[in-house]
Length: 71
Image (cartoon, rainbow, N blue to C red; front, side):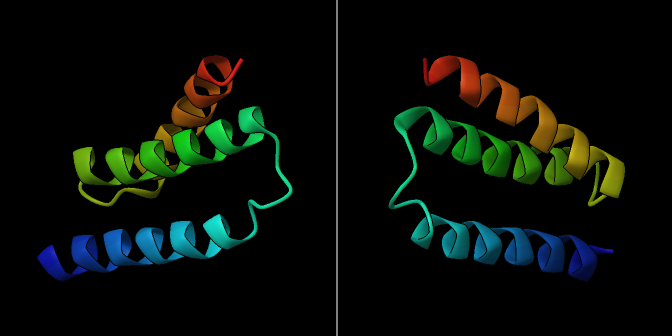
């Protein structure tokens, strides 16, 4: 189970780093949304033990929070 959690976290971190390269033309609010979604996905994965539902739920909540903070 630990290897699955580690794999999920490493995959999410790699995806966030790759997505960060494509943020050059994004507005401040879009960047905040993307960062919030990424952080929420990692948080959701960690809190739920790598559950897909927890990861997606965390990404959604994080994206909404990042969007509102980026106003």
